[in-house]
Image (cartoon, rainbow, N blue to C red; front, top):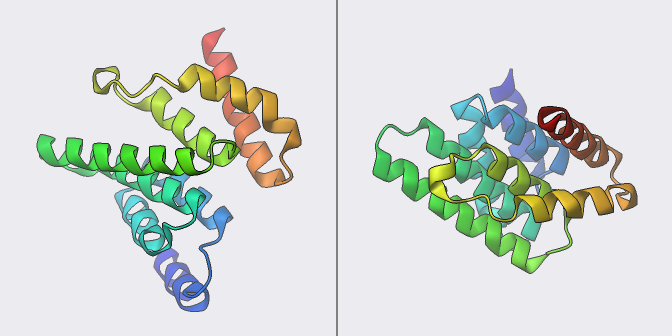
Length: 154
């Protein structure tokens, strides 16, 4: 079923920017499913002139690292993804969606990789800016995530 949806999505939206709700869904699925991680990368690689799309491509590469067996390949994929995500954030530093992607990845990345330095900053940024978000779906996703973090800390 996912394959049919993906094919129809690609055929109807090839000239358009990938739909953010679909990318959000793939991102969530990619944490548990290699196929979703691959799809996230494939869909976003051709649209990296848009910061949020570049961020999702980077996130896909970071998540794809968990599915590789070879440690060098794992690390290489992770570093490429981090580079893309950081470039996207530099291009659009006030984008809450990009900050959310980075926060969720930094909170789940193994500490030995050293990718956690902006987690506090991103969390504060999201708390300060969540009410200004016009995208209700994104607002709900970020709010749920922040609430889950808050419950973990208690």
